[in-house]
Image (cartoon, rainbow, N blue to C red; front, top):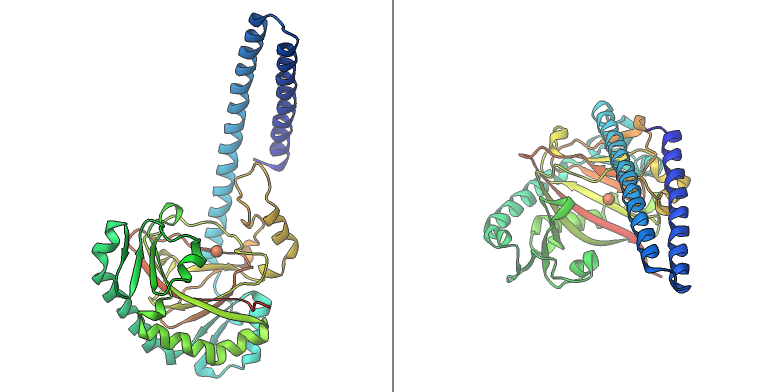
Length: 346
Ligand SMILES: [Fe+2]
């Protein structure tokens, strides 16, 4: 549907609403004035007919809007597959790149990818610690109930209140099985408490060059909890969106190879964090269309990329820029360590 048609339909809905409101206040007036009850009934019946036809128009509008949004998302996924990762955001630590260069790339693009052979071994170990653990608790996970074990809480039914912060604030690691739109996603909060290799990676991020890169690009950020995401056949993912208007940085540590798009790579629109107008518009919401609040509804298809990569790769990403996960094939699994950084509290 083009903009003109959309506007026409929106105007019609608005006009109909105004006239329906008038009809309702007319009936209310008649009741107050003690009009004949049969007359009131017949006006109510007429109103019901009009309401039904209004609902039909609305559902037509909604289905067109949904199809438009889906087509738009598909277009961007196609572009992601065609676009290759530009050299300017990729750094190999073996070639001793300057912290300044990595940091400039991060602040200009909102993302950078670092290949660091020195953490590959740790990342592989973290992957097998994770697999052993998942094997150990698979029965508890499948029960989808709240289970407290020695070192981890399995929150299979959203029992822990307070969402992300509630789970991150527990004394133990928390394994959260997500449902709904994220069906297939398991999120382990404070995963460093049960996976020693991830704890070692976390320590390295906080004390080494990654911290220097972030401090230079976006000063005043504080390291928070580290999680692991396990995506198993997550075939439906949310389209491009912003997590917040204020700065949030995530460091992703790739724990399983992501050789192609079927593995569900993390995707980003380069430079989108700088587009203040679009971000602001996105958070104000846009009425009838299928875009939800904080969805990115203007994306430059030339700038959308996927972070394909290998175990041990480090992706630093501004979450106040536009991003999404690529839908996975049903038989694929992807694991990532996720370190969150937010502005230091005063
Ligand atoms: Fe997000």
